[in-house]
Image (cartoon, rainbow, N blue to C red; front, top):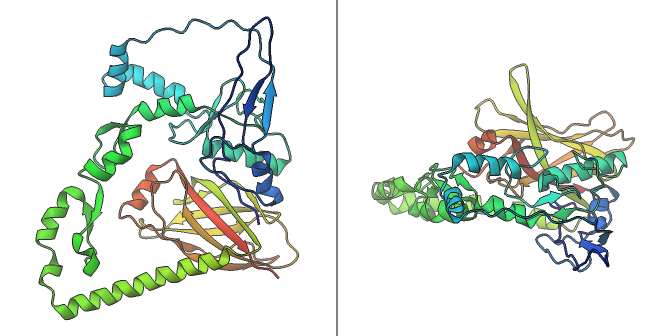
Length: 381
């Protein structure tokens, strides 16, 4: 069984104090190279997501150069307050530009990695660099200076700086710092999507928080009879049983000998007035694959398919499921699909990509890339 992780478990940099007269090597801890190799070679890998002090990670040693530290200019407290409150838009824009991922050119609330010369890359883009290098059997290189990045270095200072920058709430457009955004959305935002409090007895209403109290005072379920409520509860029970079956099947598949999961980014392109979203090639079971998605005719829902991009001589029985990516805001309800890939049939049928939030499709379309996690199971005997 093999697995790949979106962030590849980065680690902090530990430096020993040195002097120009008696230099000592600086040791930089990084995540295990097994996690990178495991993407293609499919060796068992223990993923330590979020563990910044992984004792099993490999070390990278570099000799420090004899450089004099330039004097760091002081930043006035008033300027910092202006940045936090969003008053100084020009300075905020300059800081934002300096903290962008050098590959996708977006400000990402993910782990940020740097090469030895300080060029930034967000975790999803960095992962793509590693996968591309694995496919081409080359050493991963920085996108700007071509420095070796096979042992990534995480930049926590940049991550913290991004969290302090103001950002517009996606529901009410209020300007909030990144580190307070999630709490604002869930507790204070009037535009945050919420369910009716009578959802437990069958009400399907979903709307913005500021409209919830009005709806609940006039909810149609207040006037329903006992028999009608029982019918609604039976429908909810049937839906819950269906979801339970999906999760039970997924648990059973997790015991499969050969499985792969990887986090992907889908980018859009148009063909004859139809919009598609595709990922880069990714390795699984010794083959190359990709995901292609499109918008359905209702212009709201999505569907996707799994494509085999390697030549095979014998059938491959594969089950797969798409989930929300680590940095995606759109919630995806898991559904397991199965397809038998043949030498002459290398594309699965299109399947629904069910979104559980009422504005999930809008969120997907508003993003330059769509992040998903795909889990694949090889069922060949």
